[in-house]
Length: 551
Image (cartoon, rainbow, N blue to C red):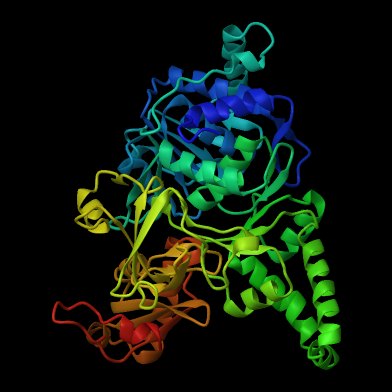
């Protein structure tokens, strides 16, 4: 595949080449959408876009659980030349509405259950809203009437049988924006990452050249497609290759996943560390912790055989048919990584960020260096802001084909994230080796990572906390894998209102409940710890966060 190939033509070619093969399924249903079905649905949506006056470069917002129709809307938007604005379904209705307005979206597609909680009047720029249902789409006239109207218009445009030759998309330069991705919905923190078609194409071509995923292979999509990681490698990449993608569409608990892996037997698994770590703790650790097995593992004659047996069981747990497991989104626990590599389990770790759409570094299992985040992509350059980038950690800075053009309508944030000479500042601390393998050593930003790889920005939660009764100031930190809010109550106000300590604690319990109603599922705070004194601050009156985050 040519390095300069058109992003749109990649999918035009794939739909034509794989016309009668299975493309998309929703886990737990019998319905299989072939590549022909997907192409037909895309044509219907293009008719819908035209009817609503949508032009190239207009914004189309999309929010809902992973589903075949979610993927079809995404593909229809980008092949039309519009800019897709994928929104995490975990965001609150206010945050969703905020992103729709901030992005200047003119159409909104939302899951049926999400749509019920949105207020059309708070999104005045929208030309139309459409609900994603189990039957496809609906507007105010309902599912059946809506889809019949689309079918009639499609039949008028294609009176004969729809063939591969009917698939033809208006080409546009790869420099054009294809995706506008918001990593946060909260006012004051929302930054829309401008991802070009070329950013995506560079990621896809790298995957095509490095990973043996080919026509007819199967994948289970379990990560949020509204994130660039899941979207690029569990959806766009396999559809480019002519694979069959089954969308899980529900929380990927180990129990559900083990059942799904056994049924689908995927050829490639894209995951976050949490899944492997839970399986290690629940399945492997109890096994190797038995006294007899611990003794046997110390004997060179036996440990190889035992490791081989464990590896076989673990491979079977993931369906038994995969090339390898690719881990990203968060660091993999070192103990887990060491054991998996010891038993020669085919796992590798990559590194990326939304601003790189998303990949920065990756190595196949056979080339993977322990504790690294893979090797820098050939289309990228890296420098470490350190006097000795091989030994002393410094900020990882990037240039290259994958790097975004900036943040939408936010020149201040764009300037802040790039150096004066044009390097992207990742905010991550790391070192490199002579082969450009990247080793993450820490994070210079305050951002936290959930166990499932979701970005958590504590300032956003703290901003919501600040508006709750009797909260003077707060810090949100990670403690033992949980989010905990350190809260300094407004003791003077409480005293003036004759509120004693017992009642203040009850108010804070109510505050925690209200806070969790306003946050995404991965941002839920499990505990409020009341602090007696104000937090220590810098001369600029900023809280010295580092004094409290490692306690």
